[in-house]
Image (cartoon, rainbow, N blue to C red; front, side, top):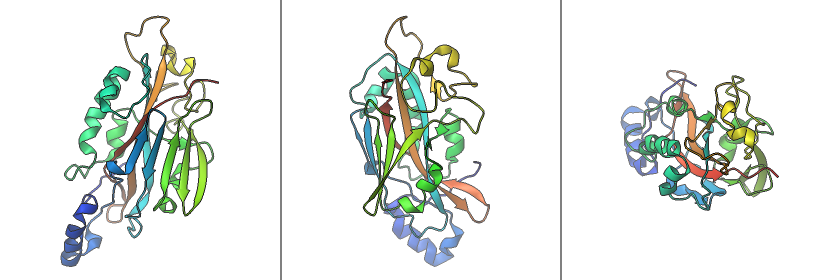
Length: 258
């Protein structure tokens, strides 16, 4: 999804937005509000709540939220992944990726970035759902609600959408890169020897997985997925995609095969 984004920042820049709107016309500025990192509540290594304000309710440029993910192989079992200090021990690639993405989170200056290019440059992919099109689920209908991600064991991980007292549950689905790779053993977010088997971690099969070197033979292997969320819209002047800055949803441990 090519494009660029000009963002006037978060809610704290609202007076500036009003000033610019009065002086030049708000239609001259393509902006879209992010989800602040403080409005995401991670828990342990298997659950997170994302609070979605209605700041984009009257923004005609807003289309939907997008979620980028990447899976990391590890031989370390972390009971809680809420601290960034655990990322290096899980997998050095996880820490490296986050260190590159971190400056964009809640940034007031790095606001004209093509998030599609940023995340694809780190081999992140778009999250999907088993039940249909995630873009429709994360569209304007989700504003003012919340998302609950559940990676507890003995089931396929899910995302609940809470809006206006209604709860809808969706099973999370791995990407195929629009058909360019075929995830092994399947598209569910479950730890399995085929998801971390080195011969499947390539552009043909598990292009969404990064291995970890130095794991001793016979050691247990776990898998974790990092997920980031951003808002996406259309710049009416250029008809290109625009993005908000991203926020980290969580680093979830994939449940074991049951």
